[in-house]
Image 1 (cartoon, helix red, strand yellow):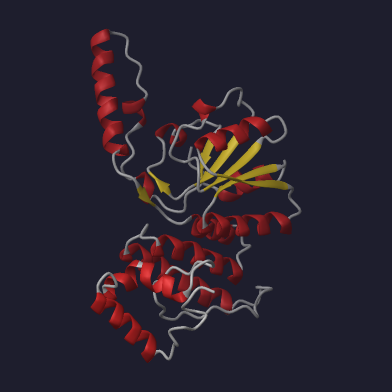
Image 2 (cartoon, helix red, strand yellow):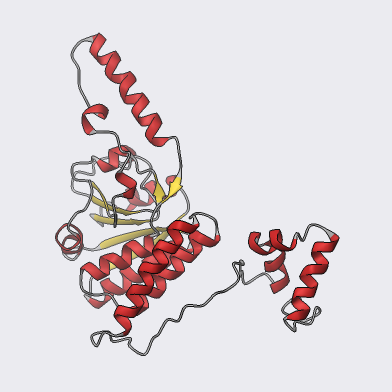
Length: 295
């Protein structure tokens, strides 16, 4: 089931009971969680939060807590497998899903009540097979065989490619905007979530630029708003190197192992290493600096 009205079909529902948030372990999920927990805290809505690593961890966590919590929010997980088939006795449980992993499971999309997907555009719904193709019931064996073949072919065509949709952090920011609770700080979280997908090659340049232009408009809008309590917080865009900046890496590690710089300098060759060292020298970086060599 697709949530069409964020306020009526999501926010008002979770406002009336405790919410259990289950999030996958990545930057986009973290940024989305920062937005939703800030929204919940501003309304004094009680919630619990935990991280999940895989499908088994997710289903086990829901089953262990379903007697305490009746409303669940899955962030960047659960969208691409049938949630209802993994659970038992869930008639009074509602599971909301915000997930950037595509394609969505068709049972989740056509679920009547228990599973509800929150999306911010219809790009992920374009190639979904129609309901009557997937869930027909035929009387005769001949009709049933024809239907099963048609259903299997439709599902195979729909599920054969894996991709990434809109980052969860952007979906969550859009939700805050529809609720009239968006602030510029939330745009920053959305930018961080988008950047992760782009840096890790989970999004092409066209989608990245489209999302960046949209977020730049939101920065401009919220920067000039008098209703934003975080008006002192400002975001300025600039061009930067596309390199991985892990805390356990030095700058040299990042330059050597990030695809953008390693392929540009061809660091696997002797001459490529020389070009990289020359680049660092032009920047004024000392080779034996603590930023380049592990201590």
